[in-house]
Structure formats: C-alpha cells, structure tokens
Amino acid sequence: MKVTELLDEMTEKFAAAGIESPRADAEILLGFVIEATRGEILALAVSGREVTELELESITPLVERRVAREPLQHLTGVAYFRQLELEVGPGVFVPRFETETVVQSAIDFLVEMKNSSPVVVDLATGSGAIALSIATEIPNAKVFAIELSEVALNYTKKNFSKYAPEAVLAQGDLFEAFPELDGLVDLVISNPPYIPNQMVPIYPEVHLHDPALALYGGSDGLDIIRRVEQVARRLLREGGKLVVEHADMQAESCRQVFSNEFWTEITTSQDLAGRDRMVSATKGRG
Image (cartoon, rainbow, N blue to C red; front, side, top):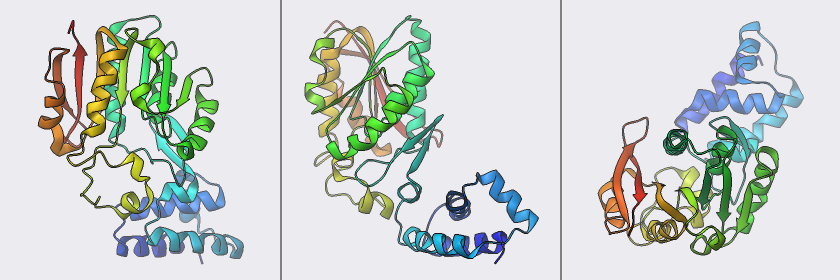
C-alpha cells in the first residue's frame, strides 16, 4: 500500500466516524508513526512511497482508537498550542484552539502595560498551555500557575520543565492560590470549568476523555468562574486585569458575575470564529 492510499483510507474512516478534520488527523497520525512532519507526509504521498508492513501494523490499532473517538492528542501524546508542543494524555484537559485567542488578549494587555516584569497568575492551568504561552512570549513575566488535579500535574510538570522551569507551579484549590501575592498581581487569567453539570458536550473526545474536573462548573456552569472572580479580586493590584474564558452562550451571565463595586471595564470579546469567548475586567478601588 502506498502512503497516499493509506491516507485516503484513513480519511474515509475518520469522516465516517464524524471526525471534523479527517484528512488532517490522518496526516498527523501517520506522521507520528513514521516520525515525519505533515509536510514530509505530503511529500511522501506525492513521491509514491510505500508503507512498510511494520508501519501498517503500528498504525492500524491507532486508527481504530481514533475511529472510536479517542482524542488524537492522546494517541500522539502531544497537543499543539500557539508556539508550544505540550505533553498531554488521559487525565489532563486537552487545550483548544479557541483558548489561543484568550491568551492573545492577555498578552496584548501585558505588552500595552509596559511593565518590565509583570506578575501573572493562571488559575486551573491544566496542561500549562496558558501560563507557558505567556512565559515564553513575555519572557520577562513572573508566571505563577495552580492546578488541583494531581493526575494532570504529571503532564504539567513536564511542560513547565521544558518551557519555563523558572515559573512557579503549585498543586491545590485555586481558591487558596498564592496568598503571598495578594494585591501584587498584574494579570489573572483562567480557562476554568464552565459546562453546566447537566449538559453533555457534543464531541465524544470531550465527554468521554477530558477529565470531568476540568469540564463541569455547577448547575449553570459558572460556579468556578464565581470563585475565580473572588480570587482575582484578592490577588490583583488596582488597575490589574482579569481575563476568563467562558462558553459562547454565557457572555451576559458571565458579565453579571463581575457586576459589583470591585470591577470596571467589564468587556466581552470574541474568538476567531466570532463567538463570545471571554470576559475581561479591570480591578477598581472597590
């Protein structure tokens, strides 16, 4: 079998299983098996390269697992996020593309602030995607992150060691995060659990494989966001910024969480698909 034939077969199977990006998944998965980039895979397909028997034996069970909607990132062990290649697997939330927009909003604020050494706290860091993006793209930032799940931290620690060993990573409840930083933080950012408990995510990769701890946020999905608001109120200096991701249908209710005397400039922003994705707010005198 040639590479192009195998890719066509995988793509057909993935499409039939309802996978959104069947060709891309096929190229990435085959590249993982034969240790080639997607560009190299395309070149091999054009050149008529044959798939070896060993390669076919290696990829067949992976194709079956992907058809069963096991996340591609669990099969390869890698999630790509902005400029990062993060180690992920069962027990840690796989970062999504839309969160890259949330990070960009935070980075824009830090750049405009022109602080020589801004202090940033990431609440519920998961794989470390947000914290490490900020640490690598704003290299003078002092980054602190906290994650409750010990299972997730098995991956997070490796990612921090790879990209930002100087950043501070803590295990614990975000509500108790970094009391030593009270009133000193320039930016608090979070992609907390925000799915209502009774709602089942539409993608099997999410509801079957992402940890429930990283998904569900109470009856209306906002319980953890309310806690983030309280923690950010404690941590931020006056004029500091909070950026929180939420579901696209939660914009108005999420703004209401910050409708008190502690916050000003409460703003909803969209992701690249034009969907309401995050709320930002500035710490006032309160």
